Length: 196
Image 1 (cartoon, rainbow, N blue to C red):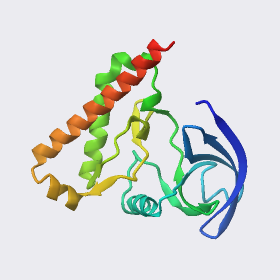
Image 2: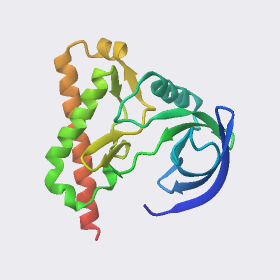
Image 3: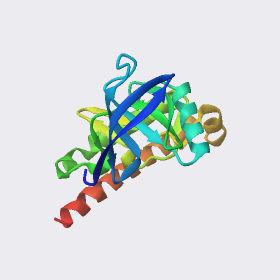
Image 4: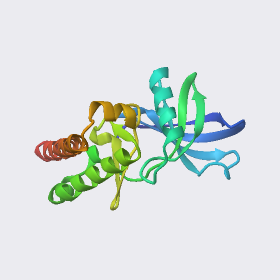
């Protein structure tokens, strides 16, 4: 990714102080990839993400998600901190490529990728979660594994069941969303090919 800015910061988590080198990407200035420089490294991995929020309500909603749900297909939640007076989530770093950054080598495997997206959305649904922000940037592909990394916009199962009381309708919604994500990915790839 272009537009990387690097700086050192300090933050606290569970009354422990950490110093970290932060990599800020121009496209995602609120998501800070950090390499821990000092601190009790046994309580955190060496690389974590600090996700800053300007909106307190969205921060609290995403924090509630991470406190409520766990999955191998989402970042691990370590807690919260404050960076430059902004609340931040401390999350595990998911190595991989956001779906909106895939190159043309993936054009032949978009159907397989759509199946992975749908399987991930079903997994979330089965855990009682419906993702409302299904932009390709929120999905990270790491080899054969697909992860989702943004939970500012989600609904819990009771609200979902009120809106979608018929499982068949909910399944159709998930299929449409998976198709929409892959169409966006295809459009992005084809646009980059045209602009070469």
